[in-house]
Image 1 (spheres, rainbow, N blue to C red):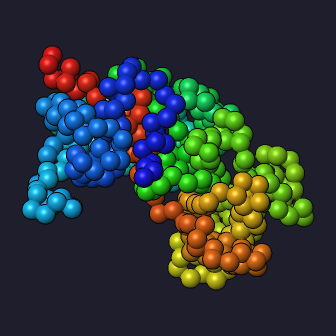
Image 2: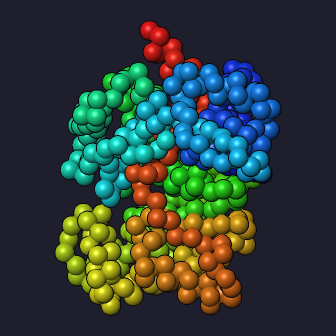
Image 3: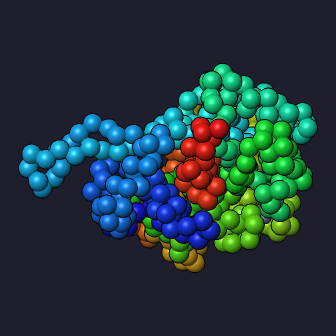
Length: 404
Ligand SMILES: [Zn+2]
């Protein structure tokens, strides 16, 4: 049986085979919720005595808890004890930095949200002040929930990033950021490791974590701007770093509006992104506000039945349908996921389906999905993957911390 744990467990250095086994088991247990030792042995390929030995230590360390009893299948009458991750063994923080509803999320070791703090009052253009406010609200959320700081493992950030960003220096058109060293300041002032991910990649990680079996996925996040991320052949591609397979400036109508970014006419950004919708709506004489406010208004008007605005979304969605056809031809992923507040808007989604139908696609629902994952869940996923399941998580850390 293939499990998605492999996605997170390949290709990173770990100190030794025993630790790999620990992490592998921890990952499997967490994904399963509860699982028996014999099921663990089957899935992991470890011997039953190894599974027993490793899990015994993890129970002693407080990382795992035993849960209830179930009838084991096959052997009549025999009872088996299930294992699950102790939710209170570790905590992480997720920060979602988008123009639309930015938030801080506190999560326990099994991904349950314990608390959130809203950041929508922040003025992202005032960079120093904004970072100071984020830091003080992270401190607040830790204090308010009486979290033991030794159990707080790290911070995952999902941000609306633009081309040219690295983890150290962020560029973001929607936030108005040009070369912001967010990670450095957060790490210094909060004394915690920080992982930063472009929103499309964060959403993709969250989607992958919900899959039983990994498959090739191409994800398109349509908000004010458009971001894409792909999981192909066992690795996640981040177009913000390597420019892989982005559709942002794919020409879809050579008679379309001129793009200020790529300088050409009728690319995806000018026809199907949130910014393009705001620009089209300006010709309908809407109230002048910030772009994200305007986009918000447009979405609620379309949802509220305004026919003109509904038509705008439908037409923009048709262009995404056309772009999806190109993605299918170039990469042929087994699944395409459309995310973001524009992407999941009903009329937009209908436009996508309409175009794909017109292009002759059958059983569209078999390869196309509209993501319901929010940006804050995506930020949480970045933190859980990085600090609970992947390289930085040292399962012995908690024991050492409590021995001090
Ligand atoms: Zn362009």
